[in-house]
Image (cartoon, rainbow, N blue to C red):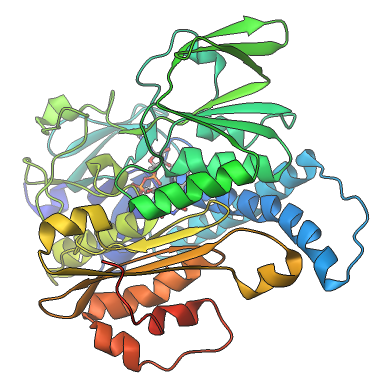
Length: 455
Ligand SMILES: Cc1cc2nc3c(=O)[nH]c(=O)nc-3n(C[C@H](O)[C@H](O)[C@H](O)COP(=O)(O)OP(=O)(O)OC[C@H]3O[C@@H](n4cnc5c(N)ncnc54)[C@H](O)[C@@H]3O)c2cc1C
């Protein structure tokens, strides 16, 4: 078929981080682009992920601010929190953002269809809202991921997933969070900060698998000190309704009662019922679309970007992949995404920021690994009396002096790691860090004044 024989040049399934970016860039190169969205434009990040999550993190941190104020001379009367106000204001903000995303797509010349789309062959999709069949020269799968309820817990349907927890009508008094990944950890921190009695339960020995152990253990200690009950190496055997409570029977033999249970045990690529088999698109054992370094599937006219490929489950990665796809396929500028160094934050309280391998992983990769680490009390904590250490760690390849990883726990760790990430991405050496003049008094200055290795 000649190009003109297709209804569109590019059909994108899913208007989330990756799909929206790909659509705007491809349309900018003159492609006729149609994008289908079955829920709300903006996708997980804007509607039920990064954005509302961060707003709730801000909300949760006021309790610290009120408590810390006394040491600085402020008398803050007993504060109270109104959950429905936060939920309503969050909704206003994500609706505003959704409008901006829609306008940006339309202004770029992209046609939005509010419908679920399923693939019906290498060059065709069906819009379920209208039944219409659209042919496309290229199809981009950008359907993201959804919360998984695996491993299945008997009674698990009594629990909520992250999509739902943002909008529960009432703030629970007692919350059980099941899971040990960043989403579980962040929600436990949010609800504890909002005054909810919070239990975080994880089947593994340590939170945040794959993260540096000093970060994971430092956060666990901080959470315990903040009154979050942390149950590690523990499983939920079953959930049952007990009056207005949910009773959770645990592998330690105890039964606990909660008002709400959040199941945050992982996310699975959104490929069920997508019609991949009609075109013969290959997936892995998790249902993720398998792609090459250009985001191309085994079917030459079908590409995939973002969470559906199960790469990194981060918005900036989905955006980069969407951009690279559009540059390569429609801009004639071959572009690939480098996944080797990804700075990232965990918006727990205290916050974590990290780039590069954990110390544990780095030991296997760099025989001459040199480790610098410091734990200290932030200046603000002197008068506030808050007893929560800041931790910073720099990993250096002793053979080249290159900084290969940085791990930070403490206030604004996410902001710090974004900037340190530039230096690490550029290949900065420890000597480059050392010759950088400190900004005083800050916490971040410790990153350029660490002189004595600990290992
Ligand atoms: C609670 C939470 C917090 C998060 N916090 C962060 C964070 O702080 N930082 C960060 O970088 N990342 C964060 N993430 C991850 C981030 O949201 C995702 O990595 C990102 O949204 C992935 O983008 P995507 O384009 O691949 O998919 P998505 O943004 O999920 O978009 C996919 C879209 O496709 C639509 N869709 C699916 N199937 C179809 C179909 N058949 N037809 C039509 N439409 C369809 C969906 O409705 C959805 O809108 C968070 C995620 C969650 C759940």
